Amino acid sequence: ENTYETILVRREGRVGVITLNRPKALNALNEQTMNDVVAAATELDRDSAIGAIVLTGSEKAFAAGADIKEMGSKTASDMYREDYFAAWDGFARLRTPKIAAVAGYALGGGCELAMMCDIILAADTAKFGQPEITLGVIPGMGGTQRLTRAVGKAKAMDLILTGRQMDAEEAERSGLVSRVVPADSLLDTALEVAAKIGGMSKPATQHAVETVSAAYETTLAAGLQYERRVFHGLFSTKDQKEGMAAFAEKRKANFSHE
Ligand code: CO8
Image (cartoon, rainbow, N blue to C red; front, side):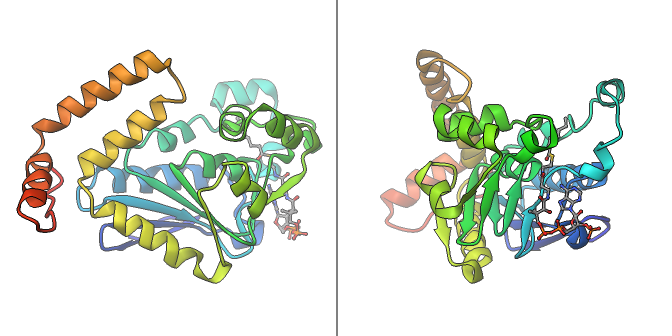
């Protein structure tokens, strides 16, 4: 399965693991990485044998941002014509739960890529930041929008205008990450969380991802209506019948992901 240039892909039970693998560039994200991650994650998303995706990097860096060397000499017209990095939207949109397991640097596009995932788990070594301002630009892969929704305006402005890094503890306190764990147990924790999610009904977890994500984009009334429609609709799945029968029969549910 490792036919990719910039990432490693493996499966552990119902969990797909994508590891960013450009160690010499601290996993800086170039177009090849984007194409690799989007292709691998899309394949995992479509596979009913996979119930969760873990995206991780190295001990030193989740990803130190978009590849500055690839971008540096492009003109505005190049960027517009290529619609540079727009394909990342295809990753953000996938509905199979995605967990970012972040150790070391998650800067610029690296922080933005983590925020495209549904859950961020951080090692105590993690450092988050949007340093684009120091390069004479602003975040361009969702930082001004997703970070602001995650941590609020005051902290987002502070981070984006100064370019400073935020450690794991501050990231947890601010609501950007769901848990901080010792660096040497990061991957085990991520795999454990992913295996647990992967054992649930995949249609249910996918709809949970879609409905929670909608809370970022809609009014409360429309979101509640959407949630109720999705809830009603899930009664068409075999997994709903199995899950509720298993409860009544005091046994563990055995989901078929249909
Ligand atoms: N791009 C390219 N190469 C990088 C990047 C990067 N973002 N980050 C690190 N590298 C390379 C370094 O150039 C170096 O290569 P070499 O050995 O050939 O000189 C190698 O990785 C190791 O890096 P350092 O020697 O700098 O390692 P340090 O431990 O001294 O420092 C840091 C680590 C602090 C992470 C430092 O590397 C750094 O500041 N990196 C840049 C961080 C940054 O500014 N990121 C934001 C990039 S811009 C961005 O992400 C915009 C996204 C939106 C694009 C959307 C388009 C529409």
